[in-house]
Length: 303
Image (cartoon, rainbow, N blue to C red; front, side, top):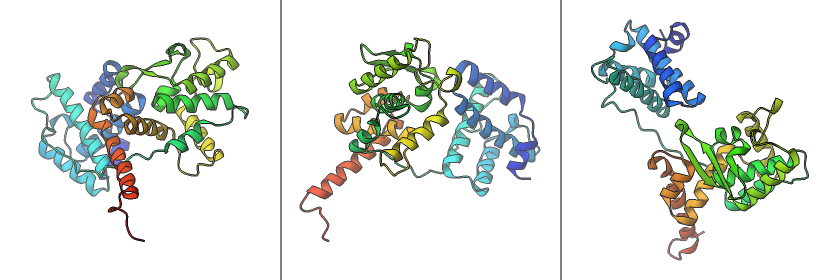
């Protein structure tokens, strides 16, 4: 019985539902994160049901067998890492609430996944993208959206849910609630402030209104922003796969390249763990290596 078939027919255990309710209520994780936990634990539920085992009774050997079976089924190392992380959080919660005597995931490690470096725009490409014409249909909105994205390094969800009350145009600050509802305040650059001011003046928006409204004056959807960014990139002559998160990556990379302040970039991005931010150091080293290869007389390759 495959895990895919099993998860389609198996009811979610009460313990899993209680854990998901904890994530949604007390932890206030995003809907995207909650769905990921639900999918990963559904895979574990399907596997344990196929083995005639209760999910609460699984031990370390069972979890090791589960990961091995998922690997044989074709799951990538990254997916296996996420599966194991969800299991670790679930059983950790069970342990804290006295539902199990020990965490069966303790000591288990998923296969290492090759870490892909984020793709970024270079400063000239970023400038070209954000300077979209304001006289085009929705031009003021598009300019404000792109300038804010690149200026402040917001997540897509943070930008979509933004209200005017969260932006202080006089002081050049925006306050957002990121993952885990953690609040942070980040600067807004002068070009973004000007673009936002022009956009607000054109709409007469109130403080409680979304900065970027969609249909029915609701907040714009992430999907709509993804499509629009792709269209604007093509219109500006950037024929590469440009997506909203690339602007956040570019913001982080360009700040780190100029300042070398990894802790500062961590704060600006709202990363809970510095290790998440450290991937941008690899981009910085990559940039330095290119400069070295191009400039050092003993490094240049012969044609």
